[in-house]
Every structure is written in structure tokens, then in C-alpha cells.
Amino acid sequence: MNEPVVVGVERDASGRHVARELRPGAFLAPRPLLPEPDRTRIALVGTRAGLLAGDDLGLRISVGPGARLELVEPAGLVAYDHRGGRSRWRARVEVAEGGELLWCGQPFVVSDGADVLREMDVALAAGARMLWRDTLVLGRSGERGGSVRVVTRVTYDDEELLVEDLDLTDTAVRALPGLLGPNRVVGSVTALGARPAGPAHPCRAELAGPGAQIRLLDTAAPAVEAELTAVWEAWSRP
Image (cartoon, rainbow, N blue to C red; front, side, top):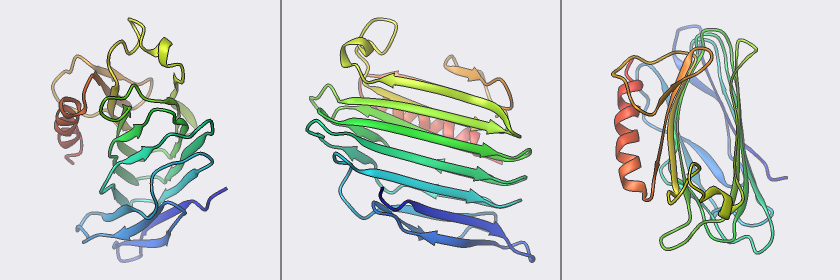
């Protein structure tokens, strides 16, 4: 198993946001950015080429009580042809009471021949919040895209808030009407721990607890990315 990226932030006795742990992993390195008065900003900078067969990219993110962390991805990630193998991307997130995580992810591209398992496991304490942007692109230009399964589990105050198993491993099945059809881009912005205000959106879904999600499908990324940016900017306002 490859070493995971570790990011831990907290607020000290004076109320300042501090990064108590920044540890690079096999694929990404956390790099501090210019701080904001109300948050710590950390960039996840790639140190190796995208995912190949046998790769296991792990992330461990923790936000202390009352702290606010913004994760920035300067570039997307590509899973290349695995030639019969498989790779894994997995993240474990813990946000303490009153803490907040803003994670604006860049596109994750699944090339022809790739076979990827993506797992997101989030534990939010009561009063914690997370805003997460995620875009999945099936194939590079001219490709149909490989296999991917996306498993997401979020708990809030030890109660399940969002549990999803998005199985896109069978390229023929996912192209059926009523599933993805001709679309190969799946993008979403998900608010966890609070229901964001704002005008109604035709693709907005309210979660069982405090939270909401807007998910978009399209045949190309630019239109999805533009609309997700507008949603992100509206939902990330204090």
C-alpha cells in the first residue's frame, strides 16, 4: 500500500488557524498557500503521473474544532490504461464540532482501459460542515472511458447522511437510457452538515439530514464545469 497524504489543521489558543500535520504521500504533496484570515489553505500538488495499475492513492484529512480548511487541487488526475490491472483512490475525512472543510476537486479522468475504485469516507461531528466539488470524466477526448466505481459514505453526528454506490464499471450498461445514456461527464457539488440557501435548481436533491447536492450530466466537461462553478461560488459564501 502506498503512503497516504496526511493533512491536519486546528485552531490554537489564540484562535489562529494552524496546520499541525502536513505529510506527503506517494502521489500528492500538501503545500501551504497564502493564508486567509478565516481559514488555512492547502494545495494538493501532484508529484507523480496519474494512476496506473496497482496504484493506491490515499488521503487522510482532519479538521479540528472550530477550524476551517480549504483544499485546492491545481490540476486534475488521470487514470491511464491499466492493462488488466486495477487502481484505488480513497479518502478519509474527519471534521470536528464547528469545523469546516471546503474541497474544490478538479476533474478525475478515467481513460480507456482503466479500472478504478474511488472511496470517500467522511465523519462529521455535530455542527461540522463540508462542501465538496467532484467531477468524473469517462474517457479522454475520443474515448469511451474505462471502468470506475465510486463509493461514498458520510455520517453526521454518528448518523448516516449520504451513502452512495455509483457503479459505472460496465460501459455497456451505463450507456443505457435512464442511466448515463450518451453522457460521459458526472459533476456534483455537495453540501454536508448544512442546507445551503439559494434559488431552486432542477437538479438539486435534499439529503435525509442537513445537506444538499446538485449533480449534472453532460457529454462534455466545459458546460458542467461552468455551472458547477456558479453553484460552488453561491454555496461557499458564508
